[in-house]
Length: 317
Image 1 (cartoon, one colour):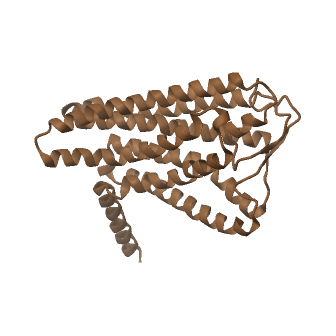
Image 2: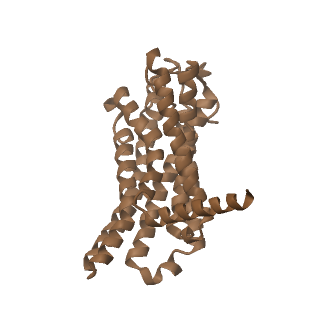
Image 3: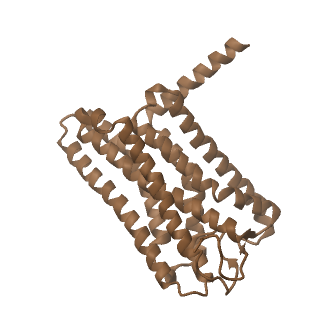
């Protein structure tokens, strides 16, 4: 069945949102607007910085630019609609728009999951096999890994979208959430959702387990290599190159596992919404900060780009 076709009478959904308190709608809009603005500037800035500075044309930064694109993707799938709702009070979303939002959200979330695993492998190759790094992680290998992450992400999203939106929604069209996500949609269905939930659990579980396994094995080998290093300076440098990635992995997977890998009977919409705000709105803002605050190469590239911009402006005027 086409995921955009509904077999029931429901043609639109009502998103309850975060709160009905009118006094906090504007403050929430301002807060989300600031966070989304930082997300856009941070991730677009990271992508442009990597494109403009030749010193950042390495596999690690290529994957980081792909990660920034994924952050922009899943944040933009949800946040603008949430902000518009704070201003207009319009809580209605059409059936097709809900399915589209869900598709892109799941796609970019899955892409990020696989990219984080790919970046762990890249760190393994850099730390454990430094002499073979340039021949192992080549430009073509990087392109295939990044493209594979995006293909798997959208294939995974298509499975979940078709799986959920082929259900009948005849109990209610009120989604107790601020965007179209799997748990609240499943509670609205009058179909038997057992098979659907099992598909979600096993597919998401496989993706998470596969990615975490790659990350775990990569870092197990990395730490074993670091412990064998005789130079304390070498150990410190190796740890510093992995610290940002480990932080991003911990935040992303910790929140994701809490949100999705639990039975529907264990879901509390209040808790899910709080976790979702952090997962959907905050994490895309944090990643550029995590990868830039303690990264001397990124800081150096940023200052170099600013100097070049000032120099160009000076010549123009």
